[in-house]
Image (cartoon, rainbow, N blue to C red; front, side):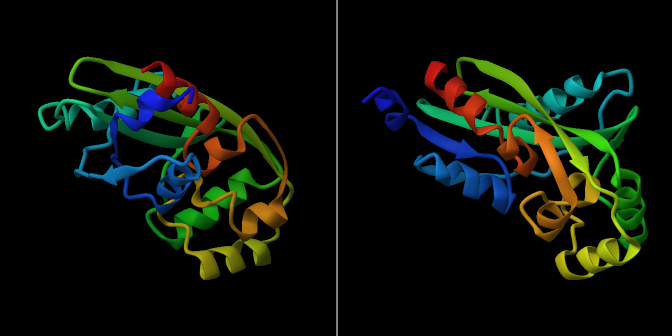
Length: 193
């Protein structure tokens, strides 16, 4: 089996995200979940890709002394970028409405930074996907926020939810990256780690 050595590793996902957990299960890998509260602020001079990688790295660093032999920690952080701005998780309904209005009828970029960490080494990488929304009506935005409450999602939306089904015209890049983990890149990185 070409990925037999993965079965000899104990994988740990450092994420509370049910979407990331589901995606990792889809790779057929067993893993444990461990989380810590992390300050997710970042230096303002970083480029967008660097922000996602920086956040994945600091999440991994929080576990540096807690990893044992044969454990591989997976961390990730997804950001939504439009123009020169990063749209984080909305703090309230008004901010969610504002973000979706801004994304309406335009393209934006979703970047996920991923970190792999063991006691011996660290590997950080990212993936970027371009997403294009059709023009969204006020009614669509209100319906989505009321029924799906996207307050735990960067950019105020989940591509795998109703707004993705009805509002996204096209994407260029990895769909799973927008959900929360660039699976093809992650799989390749795990095989080489």
